[in-house]
Length: 258
Length: 316
Image 1 (spheres, rainbow over the protein chains, first blue to last red):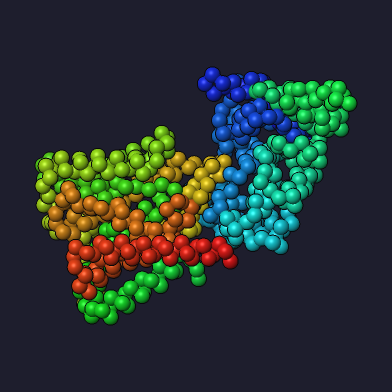
Image 2: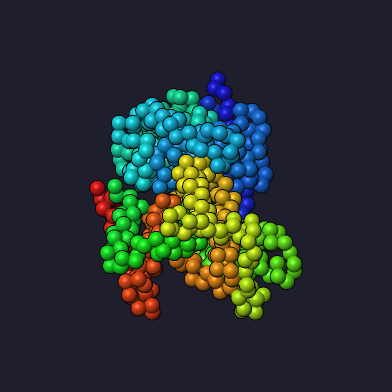
């Protein structure tokens, strides 16, 4: 039995009179890829933002490895081992790859100087090169290259490897294949599989159901702020999942059409 | 070398040579001493502005703060009999408050720094005019520790330099260190480059910005005090228009107005360049009233050059 890493119980969040998250409960196990599906406005973004500390939840409990936690900032989420990769917004384009990899967790000398402490540039560079080599993109990329010179897929790879590097327990990917070419998309999906093999738990938010069937173990479907279905990939199929997302019984429609 | 600060540096050298050839007095010890006396006053503000611009914000109230800070110091000394040291401290405290108000409104209420600091410019300048009733004050000129500290002078051969040059050099070194080598510099660039990404990594973007607003304001006040001590007068209209001149120095040096990319070395080059232009075109005989035309044209030419270089770099 795989160990439980993250458990959400009855998470609720309202913005004014809008109940963006009515009640959401889910469990994520070690080395498991769970796809979070749902139409626009289903509450996926609200859910992941709550887990990654962007805003506090109104009600409900979050457990990390069985321990009840409260997540009040992105920093606290990261310290608990929850790394979120937002679409397009994870990297600073004017900084080098190395500086991006360690943004917010810079290795420094003379630590007592606080924010004025000098960066340990040698360590920064070496660690970045080692990481790029480990994830297999060192041939193409130099750790000192600016992120603004990279392609969309390369940027996603950097963001993902950053999450892996800090040995995150839970990695949340928000639409990681948006705006990517075919080859780059396959690169990212390969990454997702590698993350699972390395023991990370992955929560994958995507619109592309085909990707889900390629990499996910389990599917969770949200609609109007609620989790409406939870199925293992092996036990379901594309049409069923699409019906769950839209709320219409597509398979019945198909049968009738035949 | 295609970096913007390098191209600015080349143009600075070209300008110095052109002015030097056009008028032999340009590179004379007296004229160089003159330029070096003015340079730190705007240069010090430009250092703060560079860090602030790199974080994606800017401050239009620096010229007004430059005027208000020494006026408040001298009013405290002359009308309230406050000790000069305490008065200077109070003046800097006022700058901290002004910077903090700018920073808090920009980050917490979310109004653009252009609008917030434009309003602050009017408030601060208006305050300086009102409390002095528009008249300049005589500044502190009794020899002593504070005059030496802010406006003392010394001779090197036939050159005469002010202590403000040391301030500028020291603060420049500190700024280079912070932006390029310190953890804080990484944060500043990241915030200006992609604020959401920085915040998502746990960087306290709002706090950093508020402190940079405070720093810029304090440096503007310090520069105002240095200037007032040097010329022995604190005028409520001192520093009028400095905000744009300072921003020009910073962007001419290669710092991006949109944030993310900042260079202190470029700003130093930019400060030297604008000083040399202002000084040089007067020496070569450009009519006084026409000279802003030249300053504007040269700044524009510099910015076009940066843009072209960047386009080329992106293409290659």
